[in-house]
Amino acid sequence: MSSAEDLANLDVIEKALNRRWPENKIEPSLDRILALTDALGSPQFSYPTIHLAGTNGKTTTSRMIDQLLAELGYRVGRYTSPHLESFTERISIKGEPISVENMIATYNDIALYLDLIDSRQTHPISYFEALTAMAFVAFAEYPVDIGVFEAGMGGQWDATNVLSSQVSVMTPIGFDHMEYLGNTLEEIATTKAGIFKPESNVVLSAQTPEVAKVLLAKAAKVSANVFREGVEFSVKNRSLAVGGQVISLHGMFADIDEIYLPLYGIHQANNAAVALAAVEAFTQVKLDEDLIRSAFSKVKSPGRCEIVYTDPLVIIDAAHNPHGVAAIAQTINSEFDLELVIAVVAVLADKDADGILAGLVNSVDYLVITQSNSPRALSADQLSKVASRHFKADQIEVIPDLTAALTFAIEKATLANQINEGVAAVLVTGSVATAGGARGIIRKLGGRRL
Image (cartoon, rainbow, N blue to C red):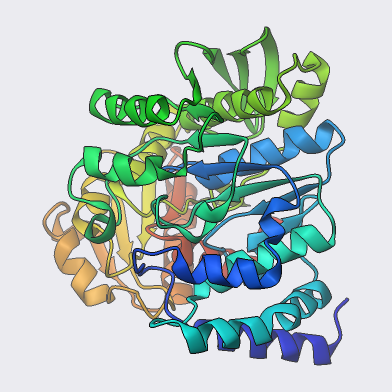
């Protein structure tokens, strides 16, 4: 248990980081992070790394890779973003968020260097750059055997791209952050493919033809070895199971059957295939089948089609773009036997709210429009106007306070279950901030231990 003094110090650090250039904006340059890591002695080269980019699925795939490597006996450092509830979640060591004490020590280790680089650059070190450097240092200090790093936004100019990774992983690419990454899938793919390193291994999830063409051309340009979902590896088959699914994977060295994966959705089966391929590309050996089964059975992915309450059923999903919403909508329709779905939705102002709500039309019966506590949140009133393009007025309730919105939705689902024979459930979605806020509220309401 951390002391009150440590928690107060952590709060001071978080506020200091939050005053920096926000992570949802990028200035296309690696100059600052390179200057910072050089000053720190390039800690990111102290251990081999696996680097992930893509639009959706990065965090869950990172967690799967982490679990597989841990099962192999590696001490794994994992860096992901954004966080659900605490920024310490971003820096994980041996499967757990960095301790408060180590987070404070790591920040103190680099604080003077942050000030030094700030004084020498046109733009100061950003929030994401600072946290990325902290992950580099924390993993070197522990030390870890391998680092698993998720790109924050894009790839070419992302702060994580000062890595020299043995394996680069590209999860599915869709439209997001177009103001920085480009307005076409080809442009977005070009930027994300910037993580491919010369003569490294590149693992590609299934992509649209235009994206695949760009990624393969970039891989060829840097003489990388390419492993493609649907060619070198794939999901052979899957079936629904209590609490998740049972999958069979075609790996690069062998087929593995009867793998229990405690996550819902075909997209999670695809993530598992990609994760296995990434670890196979890293180790270059056939993994023990029972080890693979054991690792996948332990995988958790908070905020990703996560059941947090059971009476009524409450599902939280951090989908924050049309591609992500399409995945949760398909999962709700195909893997849950529901008569009534009440969606609590809050979206960030810089996201495609219209595309997100359009994606919910065929899986949601009733909307509770709200807003998260993020400073980037789109107001409930503005979101309700967008919702009215896709849902009828009698399908929409506007409750700006997230706690009140969740309470209303749960009560409505409870009443429906009492009156009707069908099953009613609540889906909370729209952003990572919405998912994280909802988890904390549900915990206070007495939901499943989170």
